[in-house]
Image (cartoon, rainbow, N blue to C red; front, side, top):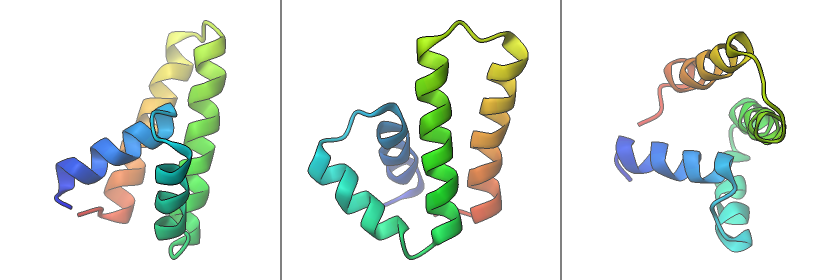
Length: 77
């Protein structure tokens, strides 16, 4: 997968747009890097919380910063 495909797949995962099988497969791939997997699960939970509430702009900015930092820190392909 190229960088764009990886990012799209992770965004779909975080947004809950993957099938149960696709999510499970991705989680298995990410399990090799426990820190990355843990951060993605946290981001997924944060997105779910934000979807259910009207969060203030600062909280939304923090979530986006964390999301972008994740990609830079882990140097995803």
